[in-house]
Amino acid sequence: MVKLEGGGGDTIRLMAKQKVVLIPGDGIGPEISDAVVRVLEGAGAPVVFEMHLAGVAALEAGMDDVLPEVTVDAILQRGVALKGPCTTPIGEGFSSVNVGLRKRLDLWAAVRPVKSLAGVESRYEGVDLIIIRENTEGLYSGVENQVTSEVIISMKVATRKACKRIARGAFRFANRNGRKKVSVFHKANIMKMTDGLLLDLCRMVHAEDYPNIEYEEVIVDAGSMRLVQDPTQFDIILCENLYGDIMSDLCAGLVGGLGVTPGGNYGDERVVFEAVHGSAPDIAGKGVANPLALLMSAKMMLEYLGDYKGNKEAAASAKRIESAYLAALEAGEKTGDLGGSLDTQGFADAVIKRLGS
Ligand code: ATP
Image (tube, rainbow, N blue to C red):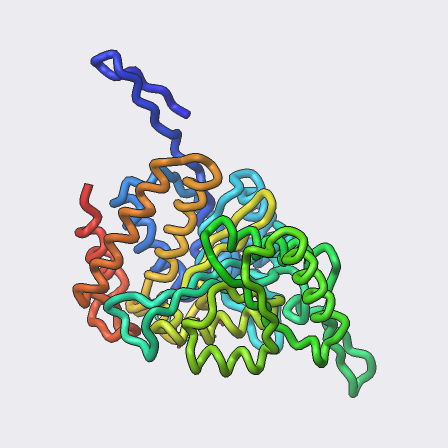
């Protein structure tokens, strides 16, 4: 806290600016990060960005790893990061930077709000659900082995510790945010031990501590069908890692696409906010990518600073930014992926001019 003495003897209390790590990432990452930083500056958000590299960008800058130690150390030290997408090669090459970062920092829960927005056309109205994804284990960990020249196995790991903390985290989140129902998506009819363990712990946490929250178990394939029939029947969807990855993109499609779905990765001590989408190499460098999902992730970061670090200025700038981007969308000022005609920086300008004071 910085304490300033005002001229009239009043005491004005201002929060010191929070140092936050910014990882621009690969592909469209640098362009959308640039747009988001401009909006946060325009909103007077009380953060100072400290830029660090990860992904292909780190290799291109001459560093010897896609996840440099200096970047991990910076997040360990600052505790909060805003991250652009990092490219993951398909079927070969280095392993995912995103997965590596989540594991190194033990960012065990991904929280991904999926909400209909006025001005963004989609097949559905009134969608307002949150995906909570276990972030550290399951098949998505990519633990694979070549057993013989003809046989490869991929290991699905579930631990009591990780299942219990994600179950508890989901119900705690529901309670804290006035949510009414947790639906756990699973395949425990087939994966009786791994997905069965998650169900056991969800039932236990629900019965012991959160009987006030409605709880349901939904087989993931049937849940996918129910989602596309009527997504408004869901409130919080709790998933193990791989199902959470797939459901995130499916749900993005329910509300207008990857341009409008933000996310936060939470650990006990550290948080990293990032959009659900990837590095979109097909449009990288063209200046047309939608920066909104990363901007919404930055808004979540400011809300986190408000809620968990007591930074009221951050909370206020989150509200200002949200009102401004909602107003821009309602006025039809949006990027091409949402049917508009603005480019990346044009959308940032449309938000900035609506920030007010
Ligand atoms: P990666 O390998 O990094 O995951 P990808 O192209 O496989 O990249 P996404 O980046 O998620 O996966 O992109 C999927 C599709 O959505 C692409 O056609 C991409 O152009 C589009 N897309 C993703 N993010 C955005 C965005 N912010 N603005 C506009 N289009 C986007």
